[in-house]
Length: 132
Image 1: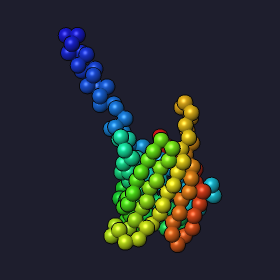
Image 2 (image 1 turned 60 degrees about the horizontal axis):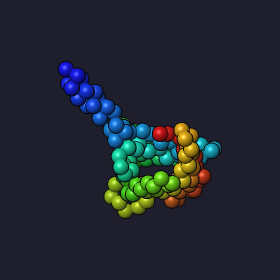
Image 3 (image 1 turned 30 degrees about the horizontal axis):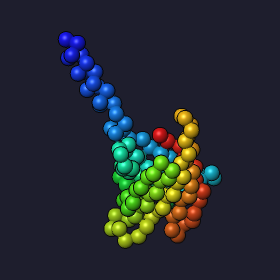
Image 4 (image 1 turned 180 degrees about the horizontal axis):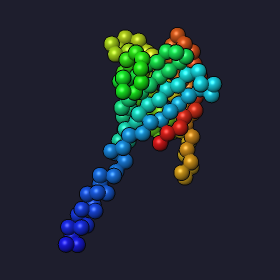
């Protein structure tokens, strides 16, 4: 009986591992002129599940479930303990839509993400982010 309860508890704990979670990271320019939001799966590597990018009235999204706008795909997604790099491209992979470059800092439970967002043809912005 105790062994079965321990096995059940281990299974429940295993299901609650971070590798099964996804979290939105929301990055925006201070004036709200542009934003880059990405849904990150927490695996051993960065896995961008979805994105929504806005500048003015223009919106791009990886799926209509994440917002209206033109379709966009993840071209690159790379993360280290100190930085995040994400590039978005058209579905045909023929032109860049946006480049997000972030630096990360953590101390205990506190964290800060900040960097740059460049959208060719529209501009470049300093951004700060909140999320997981």
